[in-house]
Length: 572
Image 1: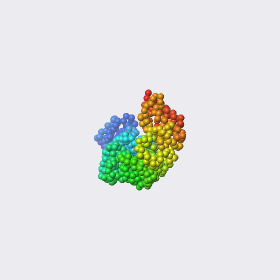
Image 2: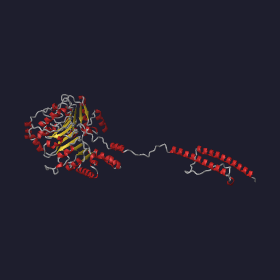
Image 3: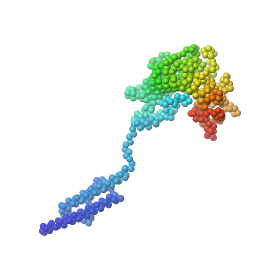
């Protein structure tokens, strides 16, 4: 064969390869488009393999392929592989965008600790904020915290503490902000906790830094030790409310073993600028001005509520000394309480004389109980002459019946001392307190022989021209203790006459509200009430309606005939 024949053969082979490659390329493009637009796509392997697609009617014989044809074929293979890889990647992205991207990325579940602190704070709240002193300045509101409510809230706080370390750190301030000591062992455990923490952490990191309110109310045999109390107060520099209800143990010896635990030193720890509410009990027999000497430092500038009471086993000796001392003696104390608005005292006549010298410019609410019944003493008069014009609310703790019983059972020589010191005459309490708007008394008043036609709410305040509200305590006691009468008589007739006496226009012309301040009386009236109870309150409501006076329950809600009828229907 000649050379020319070979060259023509090569040219023909090249032309044939070009036509075959062109046909194969067009076929692969058609297959790629068909795969791309196909709705039924078979999953391909994750690592694409080389796939060569050529027309089935063409066969290539390796021995007859020239180098140029092999090069063209390899180029076609690469183009097909690239196109298939692009189609696979495009469909893979499209499939994942449809199946996985509708939901946002939730991998970040971090919540700031500030948000958790707010959540835990609201979880620890109760119906009544134990740190809010503004709601407990009026004696119309119940200021006595309930132990059951406190324990329920503490169980919630303890449950939050045991969730995790972060919650423990966030809930610990709320756990220690209000501590109620009902047994001596609880005070000992608190002291042990505070002392142990002081060895492990700095002073500013102990739990006592969170203590805002300390309430001590125990049984007689479970009183708190003065040493434990002092330790607690030393670790609580931010204390704002302190209440001691005759619950601190005192030694019978005159001089305590540790001078730092004396009542004066403990009072000095409490009377700091951050204290806002203080209930203090005087246990010893020393003069009042010596026991309350730490207040003369005048550091308690933010004090809004003060409760003072005397608790001594030698009360009869104090009473005799109080009655035997001359009433002309005046006790001066340099005490200034610029923020004080509510004062509750249970003291003797000489102590009232000491309080008369105190500077209390914002005093508005007063609850007073004379421990020696010297309501006619000069100390009592000096106090009201000094502060009576500022009062808008007054509560007299002793009822008329107790005062009358005192004068009937007091020895004759003691009464003679009282009469010699200050002639018995009507006390001008209405003149001393001209701006009174609210008056609180007890329900166990008795008839007085000087006014047998009606029963005054209290023997010390038979009338007042400006009083708008009269609150009555212990109505439930009268409803339970009064003897039953015949069916034709008025149920609870003495109590009904006492309430009716309040409605006399001559005695209280400005009266608008009469409030039953007993929660138990409200329960007796609304929860399966007795027939006699319903009859009694029905007559009282009708009498108040005739006088155009609103009758209220302990929460200030009106008592109406419809309420009584609904309570009766609920029983049927």
